[in-house]
Length: 208
Image 1 (spheres, rainbow, N blue to C red):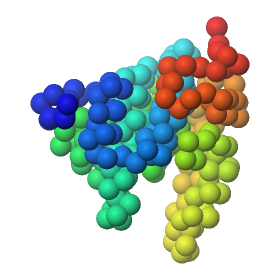
Image 2 (tube, rainbow, N blue to C red):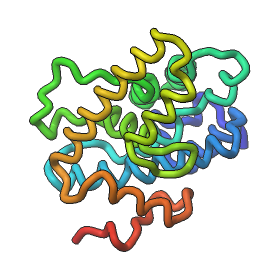
Image 3 (spheres, one colour):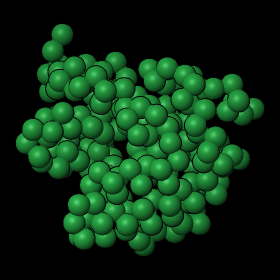
Image 4 (cartoon, one colour):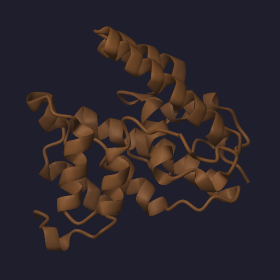
């Protein structure tokens, strides 16, 4: 069944997100990447909530699964897929999800109280989780940033932009994991499970 604007909820669940992925012809590798990002983001969000945060797991799922909703299209048009994704989701009546998608490539931390768990938003979690997933493999932030530098830093301006992104993302990692009981490297365990098992947590990461 093809979704229509009136049939899409403001925060779609996994099934609805999957239909949108099909409807907008997302390449299979981008679908798998998005599911891996969702696994990581959902786990981080649950653990942050366990420590006193108040982030929406529903928004995390929708924002993660749809963060690259227009990327297949922009591979041909060369548009900014975070901008086109935002515009598409706003048009479909999903402003909160659209905000996460708009901020998943670059997300500033200026003017935020980095000592408060309440300042970590759904957009921060999805942004960070996306930076930890290369294709569908969870990698270290260092390796991911080096990959971005090799692939996209073709000009001095691009190198400067990616360098600034690297600094901001490491700050975000420190902010997130300052509240958690495990280091960033333990997320590598998600490579042992299927990308589509978004609710499953590897046994070694299960926390009472």
